Image (cartoon, rainbow, N blue to C red; front, side, top):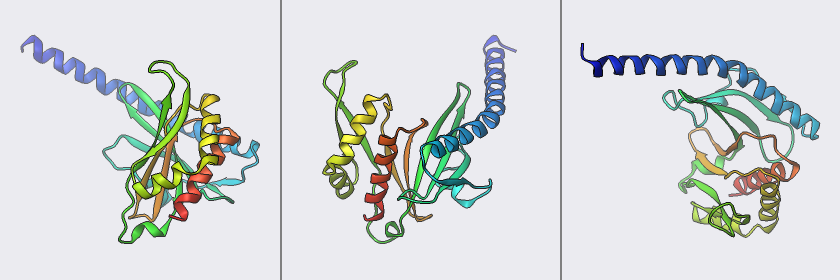
Length: 206
């Protein structure tokens, strides 16, 4: 057997071992992340409840081959956000976590197709500068509505100043009747949580 073939087999085995270890860690850490997030909401005065595993909403936006998994859902009792799905994404390099804020919106099942939309953070310097503006790009109608909401922009800028530091993605899921608002996993400040709720309000009235 040639050295190149041996190297390929060894590398494949190492990747497989790394992925197996990462998956075992994910199971434990994922439950901790969900509990941590739920406790943070309670301490922030946001009422909600943990849903049992196996709900159909856990599958929204995920596929078998994406490497993504739901670590559990939190159902909110008030506001414009219906559910929060804690998402883990695992590769041989480790596991990353995201939040999918789910907004029920039957309007997206009609003829008008909502396009993916995202926030873009603009800085006053190319490298290491301060974020001075937030712009929305994607669906023309939705982006225009979000761009003209200056209360939303102010809250996002305040959140960025407090190291939220992430973009926000909006994904329509018409087959489920929901829209996903995805962010990196972080324990949201009152400003960012209110900003997400404002976005959810725009989506419900879209």
